[in-house]
Length: 84
Image 1 (tube, helix red, strand yellow):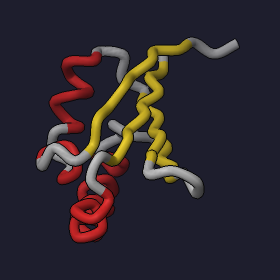
Image 2 (tube, helix red, strand yellow):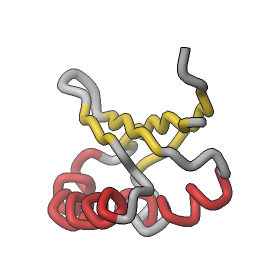
Image 3 (cartoon, helix red, strand yellow):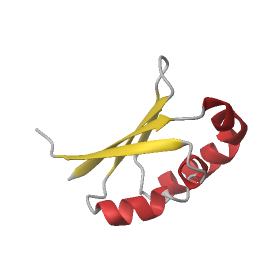
């Protein structure tokens, strides 16, 4: 299974200040295989991610290492999906 992650930035000004740290932390999760795709919306302060993890507790543990999540400036939704 695959989990789609949608993150909505709730404080864009604070997000701008943390962007470099966020990108570095995201690269670490990608290197670990926790996140296999990450995308930023061009029209809204949102991010979409793809993870092979279907255990949401395990996934959330990893995602809490991201500065946007750690500092409470992004809300997340998850949806577990299967390939057609």
